[in-house]
Image 1 (tube, one colour):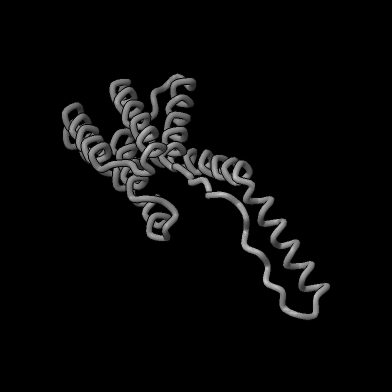
Image 2 (cartoon, helix red, strand yellow):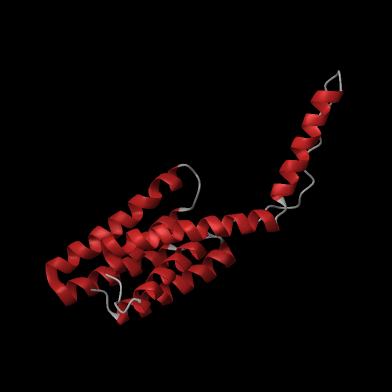
Length: 179
């Protein structure tokens, strides 16, 4: 069972991660490693060896769920370690549900960033130029590079925070603190 102390601690960690992710585009080890250590220590202190396995299992599952996107270049190592910290605090079942909600929130966030960045419009316009050139010209005419400004980046720490908080709020509304 996850206590309100863990939830308050996790909210502070996630809030800090959001701020640092937006400001520096990184989630520092100075935040994630102590968060993992504190969460594991808390669970060991409150429930002994069972708490260790609960917390360590959640940490490993949290890391495992994001390691492939990290290895493919889709996110930073800080995001992976942050999900590990969430797992250390919430345990395997909690981090699994938080990760599912994080994926949903992250997808919505990515769509908003794409629309706001006009990337979708630029892609459609560029493919329209390519299609028109192929169908109407007999010689090769290079398609001009996109004139879009600097692309916005996706701060996945925000998605992790929102998905985790959504999971916790849903658990509280159900009348039980998430486990």
